[in-house]
Image (cartoon, rainbow, N blue to C red; front, side, top):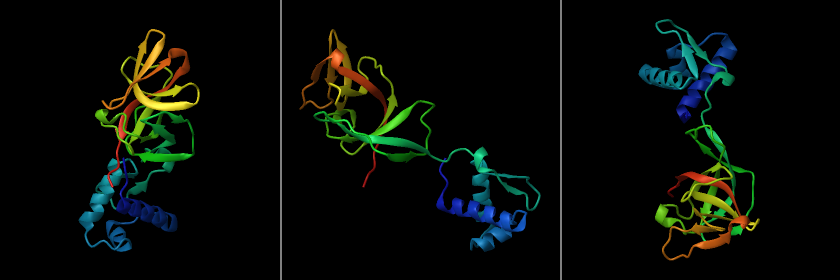
Length: 201
């Protein structure tokens, strides 16, 4: 769950107030400290922070707001490693870097990473250049799954996977492009796509 800028300000104010005074502030003190004109607004922020598991309070008692220790709070975001750029056209040399992207929804308990798409070979699957694909790290894939495939040990590509006898067909989702046929021994599955993120500019 995301914390808004104003909720973060409320949380920071509460922490600093308790540190200085040894007790929690009243709603009036919070309003004055953050230049809020309405006690209803303070109440709304406190209630939302409580729902997100960041505060605890005893209702109908003054000065009862407790900021929960950070170790007991739910994580407010998930950071997934951005492992590089993935070709959705011709395969490109695989590369890794130390970037990451932040997500507010947890992707189950799977081992997941993100790749930025380059090219339009998967456009009919609504995966276009500039999108981020969320990929579950796995070495196996079922027929027809969209996978990250390492080809000939040095090139990665994003395609639908089909095992056909002793070879693999890596199928684009773009009628203008031909499938890639590779001996099965020269293809290593690195992950399967779970979802797509798109940022509109």
